[in-house]
Image 1 (tube, helix red, strand yellow):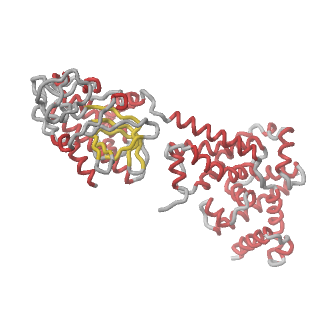
Image 2 (cartoon, chains in turn green, yellow; image 1 turned 180 degrees about the vertical axis):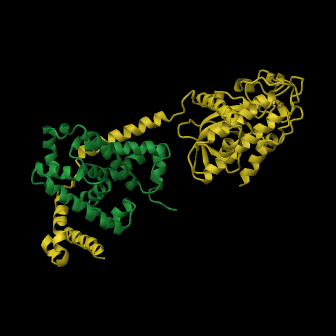
Image 3 (cartoon, one colour; image 1 turned 180 degrees about the horizontal axis):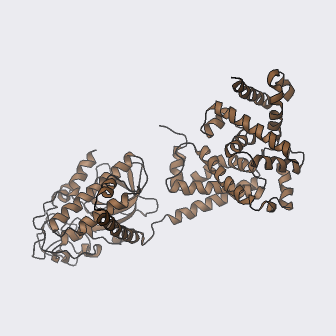
Length: 179
Length: 351
C-alpha cells in the first residue's frame, strides 16, 4: 500500500539525519502550536515540542513508531507528555508562569486582551477532560477542519461534533464559574 | 434528533465564524437554538483568539539542533556493543535454569509448547530458545546432537522468514553458509543478508560458515555483526583428504575441493559438533576474508565430512577463527550424514 510517509518512516528507523530534519521541519510548527496552545509557558512548550520528536526517534528505532499517520502519532505523543507535565505542575501550581516568562508570553498571545484573560482560559481548559482538551486544541488552537480532527482523533465527524459541543459548553461553564 | 441538529448547528456556525460572519448573524439562522448556542460560540471565539499562529524562528532552530543531536546519539548507541552476545547467552542460561525449575515443578510441558511458535521479540521466545539449549545440553550422542543443531538452524531460518512475512524488525542471529547468487544477492542459510548501516563493508566469502547477528527488515537481514565459524576449506564442508599446508593463513587460491589445506582442529575427535556450536568474537572484517571462488555444490553436499582419526583436514586459518568452546565427547562423527543446512539454503534461494 503506497504511503507518502513510508519512506520517511524507513529513514527514521535508520535515524537518517536528512529524514529526521525533513520530518522535523514539516511537523514541528504543528506540534509546537499544539503544545503552546495548551501550556501557558513558552520555554516548557518548546522543550515538550522537541521532546516529542526525540521520542519519535526512540520509538522508531525500537520499532514502536508510527505505522502510517505520523502527524497523529506526534500530536498524540505531545498530548501524553503534556498530560504528565500538567499533572506534575498541579502539585506545585504557584511555580507556574514566573514574571519574566509572562513578558515573553505576551508577544505570542498577540490577540489576547491581557495576560489575565489568557491565564483564565488556560486554567479553564485544564479542567476539561483529556479528549475535550485535545478537540479544542486541534479545532481552535490549530484550526484543523472537522474532518482532519476526526482523522487525528480516530473518530468519525459526528463524534467530533458532539465532543466539541460538550467541550465548549464545559469551557464556558468553567469560565463563568471563575472569579 | 434535536441534540443532533444542535451539534450540526454549532459546526455550521463555527465554519461561518471562520469565514468572517459574526455571531449574531449566524445565530439568526438557528433562532430556536440561539440561546443555547450563543455562550458556546463566544467561548469558541475566545479560545480561537488565544491560538498561537507563529512559531519563532529561534524556537525552531533550537528544537532542530536538539532533535538532530538526539538522532546522532541514538545512532551511536545502536552500534553493536561488545559483550552484548555473551550477555544474551548468559541471560538464556539463567532462563534455562528457570525453565527447568518450572518444568520440574509443574511436571508439564505447556509452557514449552506455548512457546514453540514464538518468534524473536515475542515474550515466550526466550523459553523456546532455552528449551532448545537444554535439549542440546542433554544430548550427548554426537550424531544426535548434530541433527538437533541442524534442526534448530532451520528453525532460526523459518523464524526469520516469518518475521519477513509479518514485516517485523527484530534482532536475530542465524548460522549458515554464505552463498552469492548470480545477481549478487548474498544469502546466509537462504536468508538474504546485507551489511547493516553500522557495519563497515567486508567481503563475503562464498561457502564460509558464519554466524550473523542483525535486524530483520524489508525482507532482508541487516548484518550488524558477522562471525566466521568455518572457512569453506574447513572439514565442516570438506571430506578429509590431502596433505597439510600448515603455514597458510588464508584460503588457498588452489581449488579447495582438490587441495584443501589442513588444520590441527581436525585432531579434535568431535570437531564437527564443536564447530557448529562454537563461535568466535572476531568479526569477519578483521579476518580479511578472501573471496575464494567455490562451487555452491561443494559446501552443500559435503556435510558428511568425516574427520577420521588421521589428523588431516583443512586450512589452518580456521584455527584463528574458531574457538573450541566445548570439547566434544566420544569419537569423530564419521557417519554424520545429516543433511546440510546449505542444501536448504539452496532451495530457499530459488524462492
